[in-house]
Image (cartoon, rainbow, N blue to C red):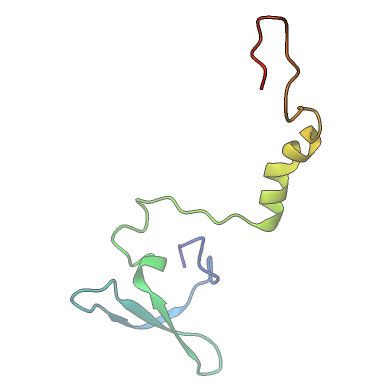
Length: 92
């Protein structure tokens, strides 16, 4: 799996067949475990013609918490309505 947003990203499977319908992206049938088979969209695999051309990411909870940590630190440091700064300042 080459699509980082897919739950099976990074896993490798034995390909059993590849279906290419005329007006759809298609799917790959793979062997999973104990006789189970999975049907995976072709765009989520390395078999896709454009799998390497478009960057894809998946934000984890930990990554989002780290990204927004500075926002929490700034809470309360900026007033909702700034004070007026002189006689020429417009009043709200």
